[in-house]
Image 1 (tube, rainbow, N blue to C red):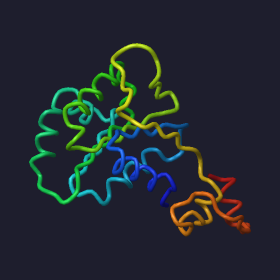
Image 2 (cartoon, rainbow, N blue to C red):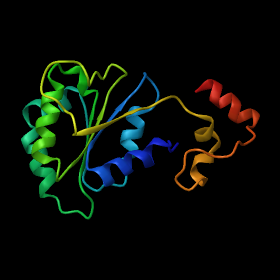
Image 3 (cartoon, rainbow, N blue to C red):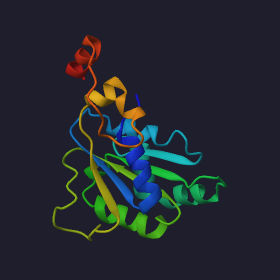
Image 4 (tube, rainbow, N blue to C red):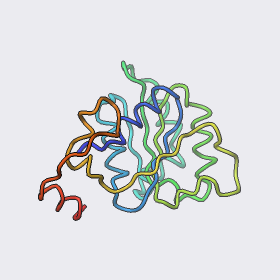
Length: 172
């Protein structure tokens, strides 16, 4: 299912050249949204902090990752997702370094739980480098598909919801 957040994130990345931080409660689709944002990008990379091989790449082999990304010729700007990286104590400085070095050549998406505490004191500031987006559970517009037909405006006229759509909203 395509979430209404995906177009908004694409706009942030394309128009503002900022990192996108996707946060929110558990099981609202942060990882799914970020993976969907990689599907049309030829040279994309998804790294999950909870997977030990990915964690090793992030901490010890990131220079090889970025070299490989930048060596690939593509019509689109490469994109990297760091999923759950907030579990690393010094994640803000790590991400800041990646963005400062490669932010003009690579698009970054950072995902994490509602505890993605960006504003917590300590470490270098990320101010001006990112836009934070809090993802919420499915909305009526997403379940009914209304947001797909409203010309890039997420506000629309009311629509009668079917029993199936209402049950899906309650379930998800």
